[in-house]
Length: 343
Ligand code: AQP
Image 1 (cartoon, rainbow, N blue to C red):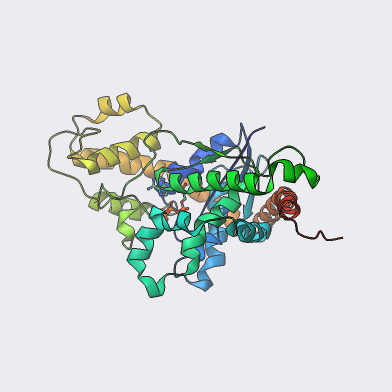
Image 2: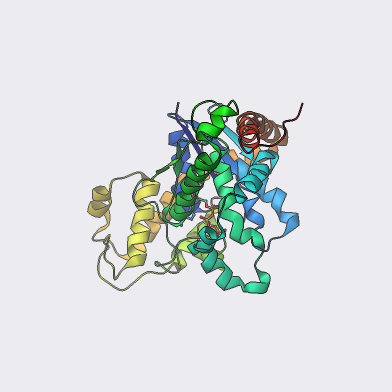
């Protein structure tokens, strides 16, 4: 089976964007691929964060994965920091990463500009090396990537090829390595179209955990009343009727897309159903669809969170499976790079 890895950062409330852009797709992928889905807590500390919140957020994120349908009997679900090899491989990869490659990363440029030089930790710069380690450790064939992660995956591929070139090939074989490559070079798995969910208060920026206003997103755990309120107050426009793909109407496109995704209907069906609606009627329809879809997920989430033994066991088992693969890779890398082996 081909292997797929992916993860979400426990940096806040998991929202519809994370669900449609990542978690919901995983549920389909776990049936076809060998899958590892982790909670990327080591990435969550690259910007200022609250230490008391981190472990809670990791548990909650794991419970959301399961509540959304990630099945631990099919996928390994684990917390990134529970598999030490992520950090270990990162150091080894760092030595093969030209700093110029990292300086070019758009996300680093944007995030560091916002935070200011004195506030920016080194980890924000080296974050893509950790991401490369997350992927290469598992010899992944595919990585689901959204638009904003494409550049990081490109770097991962370049890094895999560079390490294979520097330490693989003939040298690698001489040291007893099998095959010619240390790392598999992963391919991107482009998510289904329309999976980029935008903010409820600005149809041009993406729905995001770190946006200051909670009003801008629907969180997976939002209670019914809050969903009603958020949709009631979300940004709309004054054009007649409703339509997809009008660049003058980004909010309209976003809300119709959310309705399409949450209802499971086709675009054509949504056009037929909604094109002549006014905002009031559509908002009621959308609100009801959101509540109907999220309610069972929230019920499952509560059940999972109330049985902490079960969740701990899932995460322990996931970390055991992941460690087995990760240890083998990192040991090979040590060997290929010429380190003295342990007895
Ligand atoms: N708005 C979105 N639409 C579609 N997909 C989205 N993802 C995030 N926002 C949207 C996808 O969710 C996964 C997890 O992302 P992450 O936790 O690594 O961080 P992120 O992409 O930066 O997500 P956020 O929610 O915007 O977090 P903050 O605010 O902390 O940076 C990824 O697969 C991503 O594509």
